[in-house]
Length: 279
Image (cartoon, rainbow, N blue to C red; front, side):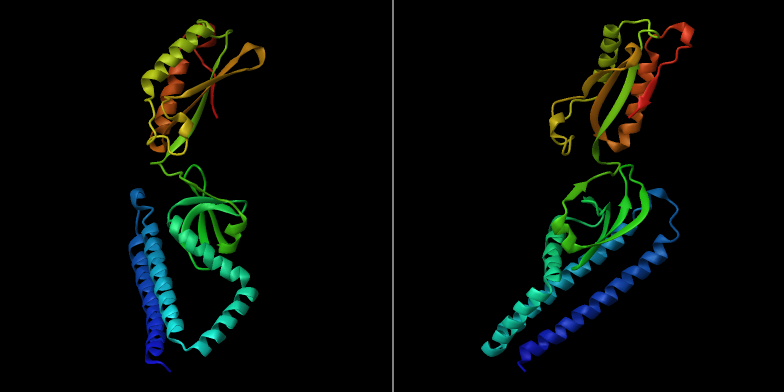
């Protein structure tokens, strides 16, 4: 046997062993550090563990592929011919496995551990790891809450279903929706005056958004907010607004909007109560 081929085989075995040992060391470190955490700001520390594990896997796969290619290059022509025939048969028999590995290369190039994705009807959540044949998602919803679900999805299924990257973190810019109601039977001001006061308040509260602030909501570039009206039963007008902001600021902005809407003059006979709702 060619000495270079023998060296490649030994190196492949060493790489697998080092990768396994490194993962075990990271795992022991996570168990000792993460189990006693009580501070909420460190609650996502587990992602660092999975990011390190993912990095180890990527290096392991790349180095193994390189060494296998060197072995093929060093093999004589007869061995290469046999290998080529065997490879063709493997591709025909194990098409789904080959496709999974191709998708794996696409996933590691475009997605990172900790990012949130939707995959057709297969699942939605935070990427925990990406393996050559499958990847794991920890279920998370748009309120950035873990759902308690864990999805183990074969990579070849991604080829058949659209994968959508979303960002529900508190630092992400997201679109928010608020509705307040104008009722002529309750308000002392006209609808025109109500809207003038309301828009003047919104103009002072919300800034003009530039391209950096709107993420994928490109239609909001140059806008502070968007407004629409719906005529409800008994002459009640629903005034809807949409605006983009960081999720960390959304609840405070909504609170200010609803408080102002309630402060606009209402007939005393109704105890100054303004009807409002969240959408």
